[in-house]
Amino acid sequence: MRIDKYLKLTRLIKRRTIAKELLERGEFKINDRKAKPASEVLVGDILFLPLGRHQLTVKVLNVADYCKKDDSTKLYEIIKDEIVNEPNVDSK
Image (cartoon, rainbow, N blue to C red; front, side):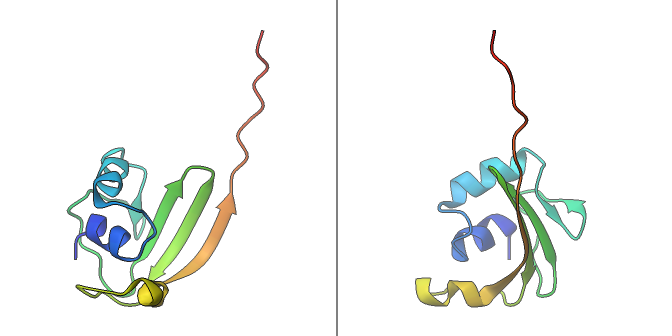
């Protein structure tokens, strides 16, 4: 399954178009490789997702074509959720 569709299906990202835009920036990774919107996601893959101040590391547990909202968290496991503080910038 494409990563942009997977991120939308799991509700990690609200819309597929937003997932596609974020993936095109080149910051997302699958198993330490840069991910593109059409990159394939397989069970067991490790995803690195910088989302704003959060940096999520997620393990893919299942890939499904359809999933109800209540069951979406069963498709992945959050390995690490780091909050990155932005450096203080003094305005003059």
